[in-house]
Amino acid sequence: MPPHSPITSHFSGKLTSQVRRVLPAYLTLVFLFLFFANTHFFTTPIRAASRYKRELKYQQPLQGAGTVIPRKIWQTWKVGPLGFEQRDSDAAKTWPAKNPRYRYEVLTDDNANEYLEWHYGSHGFNRPDLVDLYRELNITIIKADLLRYLIMYAEGGVYADIDVECLRPIERFIPERYTEQDVDMIIGVEIDEPAFSEHAILGSKCKSFCQWTFAAKPKLPVMMRLIENIQEWLHALSNEKGVPISQLELDFDEVISGTGPSAFTKAVLEQMTAQNRGKPVTWDLFHNLAESRLVNGILVLNVEAFAAGQGHSDSGNHDSRGALVKHHYHASGWPSRHPRHNHPMYGEVEKCNWKPDCVAE
Image 1 (tube, rainbow, N blue to C red):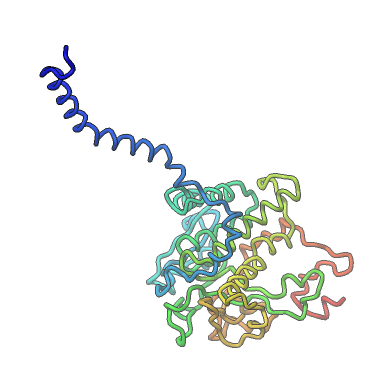
Image 2: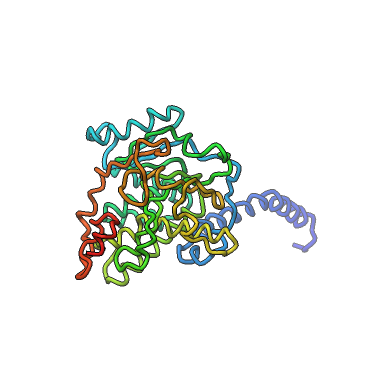
């Protein structure tokens, strides 16, 4: 048949017309296939090590600037409120009772994993490394510390240990001279005994903010700094001891410095410095703090606010107007499971409760 016969031309024209009709659909299918085949590219988690190195991210202003700390009270415990022992229930009830406008929630050992999956899984912050880290941990106090930080980064609000009693409404946490919008985080001094800075055992613990009660807006850089500090520390400790994280055993000092008040304080001071154009913010700014001080969005209350009645650090007592909470310590049985360092010269000096004469003996 001749190449340009009427039959051939008709067939070619029909074929071209069909191709034109199906080509857009075909290209769409190819695009969708390539997109879904490479979805992992968009959801690959950012590794903690690379995040930690990018110090600049911690210097960025809070995305939610101008907002207020969420009106939500958080507590964590082994069981939910219906299973609380009487003493835990008595302390816990004071929070919703004195703050009726606040939501109240308790995360338990049973539902914490689901909470973290939701907020830190692929449909949340996409940090499965943090979900895995929490699951791998078998040390109760380390899990409890890490969980509170993860909650506060995800949703913010007010956190209180289960054995902390609310003495004053949360509205009293921010003095009238400040506006709620300017306060990103509220913390209080716990230990203010810098005279022991050079002591072999007490030196690392003598200047700290408490973390049995604090408040924060969600997604604060300081909270992610703290979380990633803990992550780095646990992996380093695992390598150093030659065991997986699930098999780590820690002493008292390692808990305090790794996830407790010392770790909390370190992250806060680092964040204050990062947002202060690198000019160091040291404990000198908070020693003998008589009134609250706002530093780059972090409101620091004096020792009486969250840590009254300790018998040291000029902490006053719980009857004063400035005392906002009372820590009963009945949930603080973890030290008995983590041996204190018994120095051949100093012994267990923490039992001295920062009394110089006792420490000197």
